[in-house]
Image 1 (cartoon, rainbow, N blue to C red):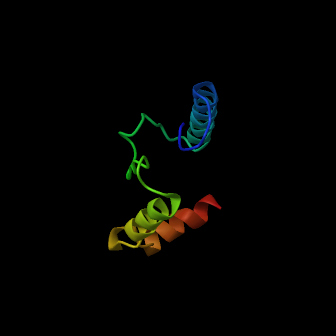
Image 2 (cartoon, rainbow, N blue to C red):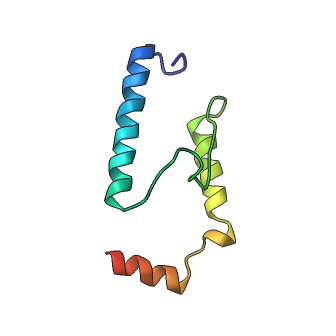
Length: 80
């Protein structure tokens, strides 16, 4: 809140809106979300800037386990 320069009530409103949006998205794609237990990556951004957080995501996603396989590409194509 301090970093963004917003009041507690405004921060709460934003969080509620984002949570509702995430819930709506997850229902659309038949995925269940239960907080961070279902997250593959959690980045606490209290002391990180946006560029650092994005860098962490990009570095993580470049790992071999995140490379597209022929099977995952077919599954993705079937969704389109």
